[in-house]
Length: 582
Image (cartoon, rainbow, N blue to C red; front, top):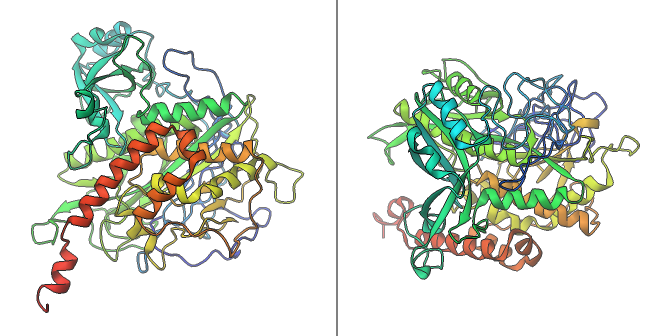
């Protein structure tokens, strides 16, 4: 739900849910049993060129718990978690994430397991498509020549090769199908500077740009990620892994997808297979010349969330988005209009961590493309309007073993939550200040977090089925056991969000950390400004080392440059506040 506050859950902060208590529609955590359905998950994708191991996946926590499909593949998370209200500013009653507090969770996982439309809902064991595998019907044969033949037979003559920059923006090249085989091996060349360029088009002066003579990088096509959008006839999408341009073609340290892959590999070497499921909120905007910024919410009226139909969605864009993204193989589960006019939420199935992030990345690109085709704009920024609900990106996470068993589940424990789950949770909480910079990577994100009545957390705490907490443990147990991290901004890069959380959780496991008491009043206060968050990231050596020193250095520099431009800009607020009277 959007970031607007909803009444506190009746169970009270930190209180464990009573057995059988309905949960909101949030995806089951990886490794926990999904209500009336098992989660399916596959292994995260292997490094480029390596075979894809069949690993179970568990669902990742999202703001709104996606409905979970039947029995999952090993490694995939179950999305049948109760929906949680998103972070909402006062009066912004749209909660981020699955349902609002108090909403019952679906009895079973929604169909369409991790990324596979129409597949049974997985439980928190590992099942579902392997990360990087195409959705059913889109499965690509090995080799670009075979891929080109398959696409030509389907009427596709243009392949869009996509990758993520550090912001999460989709970068890429369109390739005519007749030329696709030219890009076998290391792939397409592009200027590496695009990875260190700000949103205003200003590259940092570093070795990846002017400091190194504007060097090339390569985008190696991953045929297993093939998707054919119905809204772009004759076009296919495929994701790429980023490599350097030397003869070795080593993975680029600044590739967000590669960074997540490395965190997944660190866990899988220990027999731990991460499962994730995102909940994404966004606004559709309509052009309005008379509006202060030239745009207004696509719908004018706040709805208090959980509304569907033409009354507040006159163009029926939500059903269109769900159908198109489902057909694209993105594993979308449910959707609804959120609290503020023009705000929507669409939840995704759980799956192997890399697969879940791939789908979230493509989802954001698809929503933007479809919106433009209808004369609108889609934005995932956390707080596009003063006094309106904020948009979050809740993430459900769990770990499963090689057989798909949920490692967060402990049937003999009083609360059904395992020691390894507690250590993972403790790692996330310990690194929460530094994580803030990655999970809330814009100046605007802190307007969402600052809203007094918002459900977005401001302290690093945790609670059982408590939507005011930084980490919520949904009521499902068994294969649906998982955690839901509720702080991330809708604009955050899904690859970096999942990678940073996995790195923090693994540190907790390796150090055998113990979390503080539930809803501890002495919990660490999160950074209140972007500058403070970047300082916390600089000071967290363990997290920086896990993510890679070069990534941390460049990410922080890129974001400090963004912050500096904001601090030099004169805002509309300043003009209205001072110009007439002073």
